[in-house]
Amino acid sequence: MSQQALPQPQQQQFALLPKIINGGIAGIIGVSCVFPLDLVKTRLQNQQVGPNGEKMYKNMFDCFRKTYHAEGYFGMYRGSGVNILLITPEKAIKLTANDYFRHKLTTKDGQLPMTSQMLAGGLAGAFQIIVTTPMELLKIQMQDAGRIAAQAKLSGKTVEKVSATKLASQLLKEKGIFGLYKGIGATGARDVTFSIVYFPLFATLNALGPRRNDGSGEAVFWCSFLSGLAAGSFAALFVNPLDVVKTRLQAIKKADGEKEFKGIVDCISKTFKYEGPTAFFKGGLCRMIVIAPLFGIAQMVYFLGVAEAMLGLKQKD
Image 1: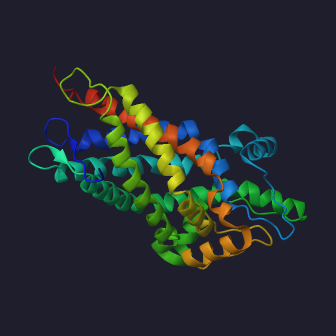
Image 2 (image 1 turned 45 degrees about the horizontal axis):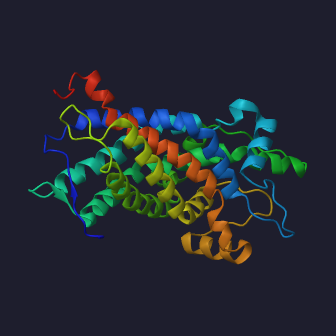
Image 3 (image 1 turned 120 degrees about the horizontal axis):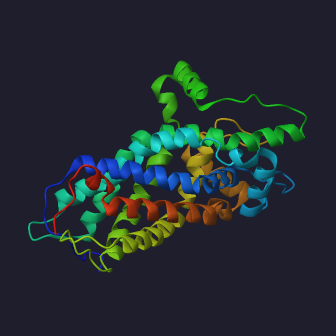
């Protein structure tokens, strides 16, 4: 069953530009819709349990309530600027690379074995970390700044506010371009694993639905949307432990008393020792709620072929 080949839509020339544009549009729309949930996810994953079991946020809803009360509506979108700016190339690379490798790995008789689907997804995930790593690094600092400031306030201290531009300039000045790639190993582990799971699952689910009547062989938009929701939520929960490790490694500023981590193994070891196995699923539900609509919207826009319509490349009936 794991080697089952998936029939592909009829062979056609691989059009790169519209796929890049569709990926970018899909990413911007998706992120704009779910960013507050992503902020909550980041804060839940970064908070560490104190020596007496104390923690700032009890759950997702408590984090939402406290963040909104302390920082207002726009506080829920802290860090969204850098995310929206970089999500265009990130999503464009991810979705386009997967399509490209699937196109190249499809056999002459139009079949794509499951192993090839997983390879295409994994390669797409590997390519995207070029953009994902600095995007996530800057975004996480912005998203977690409110939590750090709130905890510092409880201790009678203040934390200097910093913008994404200032932080990027500081990292480049102190550590060069590699300063923006802190946590690249953990990011790669998460994104490659996610893509290996997500893309084959999405393609399998998407193949079950009705086809469009334009001769393209693609699924109707609502099928792509639902397939993206299902595959995204499952893959998100599957890689959540890796996402927790990545988020903690990329957090440059820590609240008073929070532990520092030297690397992936050290982060896993300390998290397990002091917080137990459930810590690796912090923000899991929130991440599923974020990723499901993000990829559902992304796949729907992508498969609707918005760019093809804009460029006058719509397939003929």
